[in-house]
Length: 629
Image (cartoon, rainbow, N blue to C red; front, top):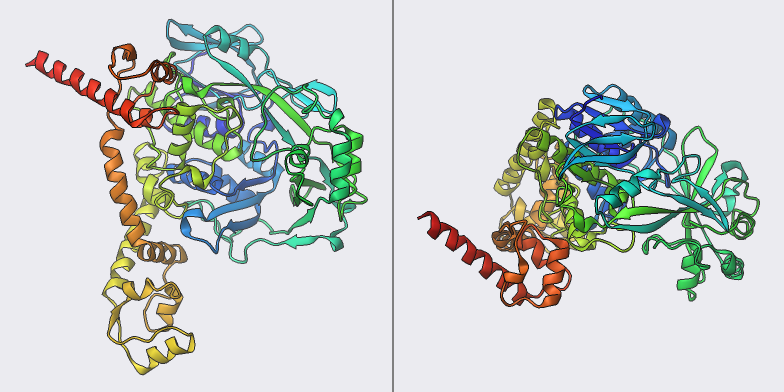
């Protein structure tokens, strides 16, 4: 029986990150995938990042993951969303060449030392008591290991729907994984059923571009990776996307065919994503809306396929043709592929620790859509954390946990393992209470030290990080020590722009706090900072302008951290805790929080219940100390 340290089941975005980090951290690793050519494949939209998702990719990259690097190798359009708003909600997004993204990921993983890619299907998780010892395969063989990371995506007992047509499979052209669900249920895992969907793909030459609005990318694109610095950048040719809209005729056609929708006739039982609904769901829920925006996104530089973002659907093929051709610019649309929905099994993530390891089986980790999430970025983040902790388990080292105060990845983990989800979970900036501190521009400053210590960032990349960190500190001091005088030249410059004049000398730091001032303005007035790297300029400017808000958040954070880490013993009998209602005891038994911080954020927990739990834990601690004395 072949033996590995870590086995990763599934080669989607979670699986790629998990396999990468486990191998990089020195573990003999196997990646099991039903189809090598689908490893790293972008199953749905051909884009990475977006609101809050850009933050996740930046954090993955800061820790030493591969998603940001691979995006920069294959991006065909960069856009920074919310660029005119505050830094807390700015997010990067990149359109990718879909085929090339998968190819580059496959090439990288194929050459990664310590990783073996096997075209095998796992059907059983093998255990010895409460410890994972291997996986059983469809062909009857077994592989032994000390840790398993399940990243099965939308493939567990998956069924695809187009109208009343049903086909087994987690993605068009790929079969479902059937046996693994039964194995998990036999181990006692609670499974649920979720649904996702995808829109039609149209032939680019059948679209009338004269009727629709072009959407270009940024003139000065910003890479996702802090450490991959290709020259020239961007690597690939940059192209336009396009915008059009549904209309009343579109909505009428869809409404007329609700009775042919598997969603509305009960064929699909799984719950779909509320924040990325199908077009039939949009039409039903938002009847007052006269139109819905559609983005036409080319899937690559060498393909004719155009992804129609905004009309995910499982309606029959003839209905899809009718309503798509009612849309301006798509009157003569030719279909390369029809939209469809996928229904699949997932687990209740409350059965997991913040490391994404099972609370009941040592060495069994989960990442991605099997945990109830949607999106490539959420999947990649979970795969990264699961892979890191699988490797640390092998090395008998302490687990690596990000709290919701450390990053969006921590928010994601905390939300999932404490609250679970009854619909596909999607990350938003509003989910992060400390989002001003958890910006995408400072992800490296927050996390790269940890990535280097884990062995995921090379010494070369760590040196790059230290140089940037030192440059930021240096120029923060330079701007603080530089003074502007109320000269005629300075005051004339200010007057011409409608700004109040200086009466006394003012430091560059104080001057920069004016809302209308920026780094370039200070340089125009004599500050010697024109040659400073743009990312350093941005970082210093944000730190200066938002210093008061950042300090307030840091002070608040310090108060939260004091109780956040107070551990709750895994076998604590909550019935012994005085002052807890039966309802709260039941919630605690179901979720089994690991810390007081986690308990305080559980649904239904009251301040009084948290206080009662803290008192009980302190009493237990006092008794233990007394016994030792």
